[in-house]
Length: 252
Image (tube, rainbow, N blue to C red; front, side, top):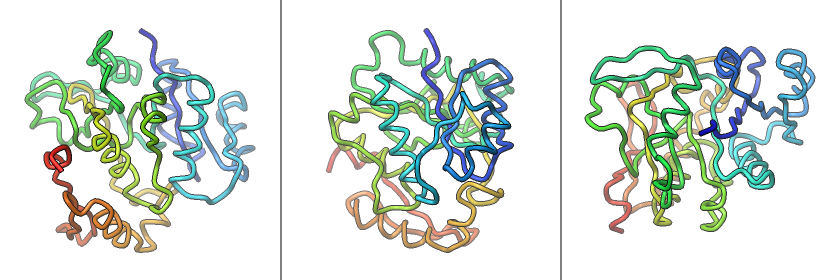
């Protein structure tokens, strides 16, 4: 089994860790960047690894849909879409975790599905490292999927699933909800993990968006869109978020 094509969206992070993790173990990948940054990224990563997303400053939804369309047009059945600030990958045995290479993590997640087991799966994902200790199974179905996800282009196109252009944040949670509502499954693999900084804490990417205070509005918008199983709430650190009752989605 080959690793699905790896596509990394990136902004203001020419020196981004995710691409370095791919290079370190020889995983082919493409970086999707704005026209204003193409030259800088090409110099650092090689022009052959850069895809120009045609427009500047259009936000997260624009680039995620651009990548989805790119993969569909290329005929990719599956592809990985990765954030550009992944710190490390890990494997898990019981409650113990250890660092591993990107190829081991991505391939390991793909093998969880196995030949013919992905018939009803629209999205595959890795688990956050900080949540690995509580995992009792190799994977969980129909819950959150963030940062390191693989999407099935044909299934999403057939169900007319795309990132919601009315949102700036919470777009990954929204896409995951769309997939589950459509009747497809989301599989999050708990044997392979990743680490990433807290949202908006590191320079580049969406830091300016998080600092603008729109997270509250987007949490409210997501709750309004899916009122049967979403509700806004405030975290202990004061961050505005949305609580999703994943187990209710298929029953509504």
